Length: 135
Image 1 (cartoon, helix red, strand yellow):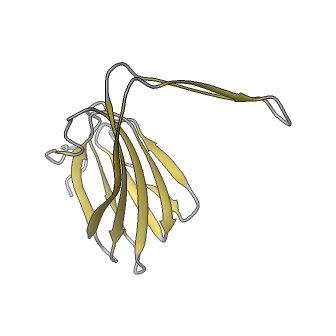
Image 2 (cartoon, helix red, strand yellow; image 1 turned 180 degrees about the vertical axis):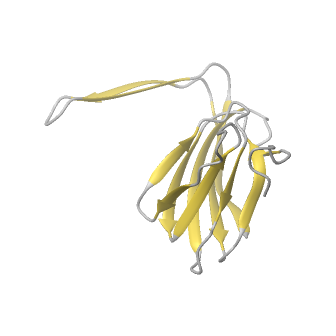
């Protein structure tokens, strides 16, 4: 498993309201108070690799760029696997939600994470495996 920070920038308060009107209405809103650290992180998963249980203080957009990664959420009583393949993405909401990512295939996988965090916050906070997901 390799993890490389491709970029990190510090942003002042962010206040963005974006929308399009054609062909279909679309809106996005992003607002922060205080400085934010924005990271772009490349995670490469050899077959069978795992990013152990952890959390983040705030949200991350996870883009799967190669292979398949499986996400497990610590607060899911059934520990249901959620597999994402190249071209798909998902949101890690952060806020202390514990999860782990695995490559459960025989092919390499890769994700790019865009993380939005309070300035100076830890990017990743290790966590114990929850009792409902004992691996």
